[in-house]
Image (cartoon, rainbow, N blue to C red; front, side, top):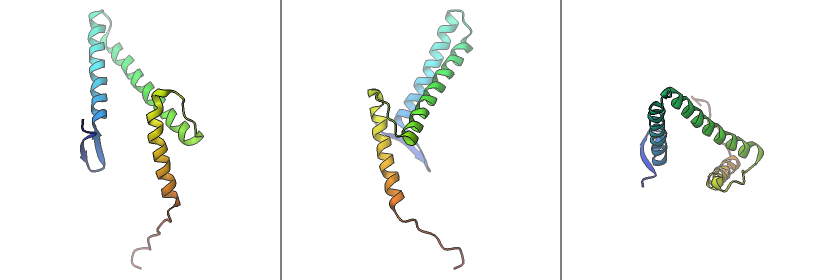
Length: 109
């Protein structure tokens, strides 16, 4: 599998991002069809799906802030890989902070 499908400027589309988006869209569509088959307003499936997606995003954001602001890592084994990536980002940040900052002279000097 290709890790990145395409890149336009600074934006790149990772394969997992596209597949994850498709899974959400198809899941919402299937849920709405099942709700309709059961006689339930299909918009309720979309509302529920939106809440689930939002909850997932907020949960990941909480993990991110707790990692960076409190040095906390959730012991859940399912989150192990995300913390490996975030530790690597932290190393890069620390390396960048140790490098002397270049000050550009004002234009015309």
